[in-house]
Length: 269
Image (cartoon, rainbow, N blue to C red; front, side, top):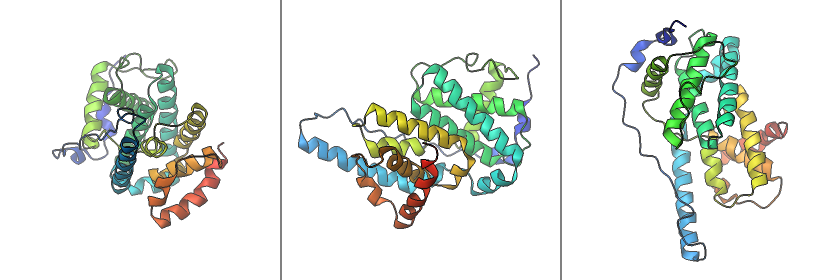
């Protein structure tokens, strides 16, 4: 198949000519590294989690799509259809390869951020497919140990196939557009941090289903990642014991939104 010129994805190429700012180093906590029978260590872990949570709250807007993106999704049928097709692919291909949940939500974040920077583009099917593959590839390279090949990432039901060189060029384009910031703060980042290491498999499954459904709904873009995460946890626990101490650290105005947003998420359960 003739290689497709992906450069038509850009609505303003000048956007990517500036030198990108180096990404901030990923912040990770290893909850299992301390001895579980030492109260001091457990308290220290709690303090570290809360400090990281406050840092996430301060920086989550840096990894959110452009504000105009929300308006564009409301008025553009083409953009909504492109986003839905891309999110469906991300969820499907990540499920096929059994990747970590963080990889799914990182790929979705890259996609929304790139689409928001190019929302003026009339998205054709091949463009959506190329961008979707690229976002999953970048997310896998960032987080996974076993990385699927660029060939394997191309699903049978896709209408187009792409040469590895085309996908690699697109990867560089996306990296520049996102300012090389792949260690993003998203909904799953907050959920993992708020629940900590002690969460049941049943709760994990319920939360995963809820959050994956939320990816498909463009209305979710209106809300901060911390709000979606907090609401999802409250809905999934349904009164069961859960560590919600971090919820009290969310600004009061956002907590009011969380109460309203729970009703939206409950419909998805």
